[in-house]
Amino acid sequence: MRRILIALAAVAAVLAPAACASQAAPAAPANCSADANAASGSDLVACMTAHGVAEPTRWAAEVEEYRPYDDADPTMAKLATNLAKYHITPAELQNVLASLHP
View 1 (spheres, rainbow, N blue to C red):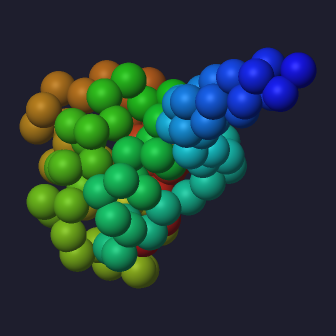
View 2: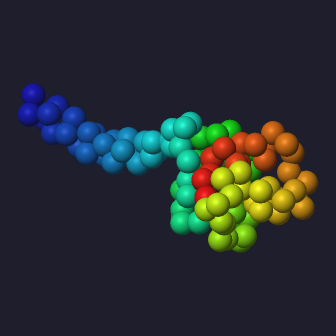
View 3: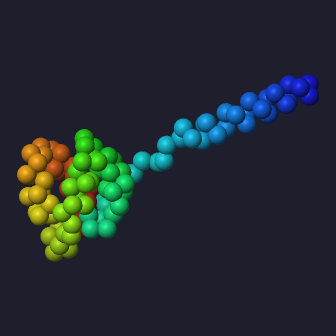
């Protein structure tokens, strides 16, 4: 009986770290809104992903590149104009903008 318990403990010790490592960080809620001026790249990506943006890493990099954004522009028109240069689809642009606030 003691050997069985030792064997089970050994198996549990091996499997426990793998189980914890396989658990991903919780996803951002669909209603998240990242600060376009201050959010980190990973926060931008998480929020864009939650909003269904197909290429969140690409667009997060563009958001960071065109900083700063004017607080007086709640529609983020400057960003929309800059992203249009990259032939972003209207649906994708809407999702990107929905994930941000100035």
